[in-house]
Image 1 (cartoon, rainbow, N blue to C red):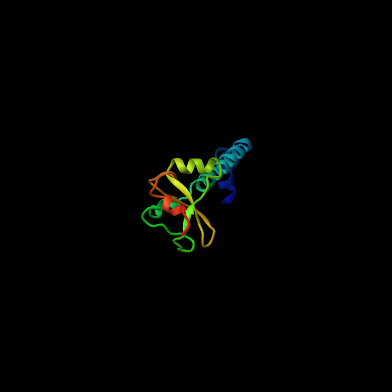
Image 2: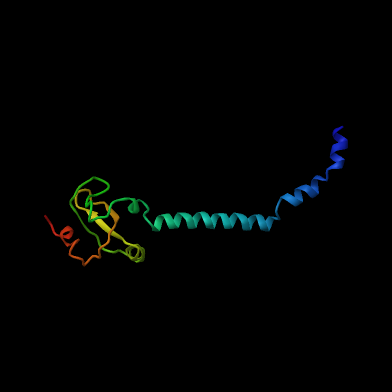
Length: 120
């Protein structure tokens, strides 16, 4: 019975129809790796948790330790400039010295944030 079944199904042509060529398989794997790397790059460039926090003008506290003693941090490169263009500004906690980003409707030179940069 099985010998009759194996002769009726051409397995080689079935596998050839389903399986891609080796070059196409390599292209699929490389495309998947590029998409995966691009996804993680976007997550690294954009601190998503900062979008869910309250604006710094509403709740000026460190997300790591909860201290209210924070200051503006310096912009340290191209990525920080891109983040600033979409409204995420860098801040630093004076208590735990951790750097974090927060949404802000103000620019660095705005007087609304100026009290954050003065020592208490």
